[in-house]
Length: 196
Image 1 (cartoon, rainbow, N blue to C red):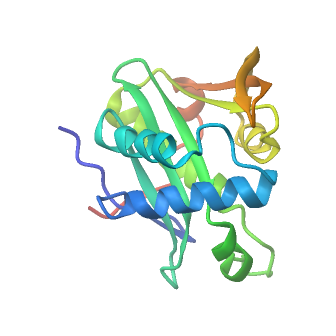
Image 2 (cartoon, helix red, strand yellow):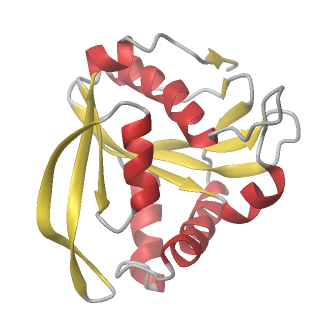
């Protein structure tokens, strides 16, 4: 069994999601859907959505809560599902919109940091090494512009589109597939420091 450690960067502390983290994750997922997309997608019905998150965290999944390194304020989460060791896994980023309005880390010049970018470039190398992955992927509805831009910023490649692949509020939406191969992750180097 692989023990998921705390990871630290210059601005973030990534703390493994424990049993209490599921409630937080569910809450910020819902808030993010409402605030960013002005809707709640079709699997955000109480029982279905909650079951999905809980089952993911209990079976074949792991992840981290993202905390501001200095203040310990929760800024979001980054979690991984469908982990097939030696092959692939899928990632899900979710930001705590409320916390980020008040507590976004800034650099020495006062510029706002892209916390999820930093978290991904910290977590992906650890996941690839620990699980022996050949690929890390993500699949997002075409309406989810923030996640699509995130994939592009961290250098993931668009691998394809599943036309009408998901339903959002009863309407079909394309599902956009992104991926990053092991050698592309390795090229980043290891930006994180394990503290566990």
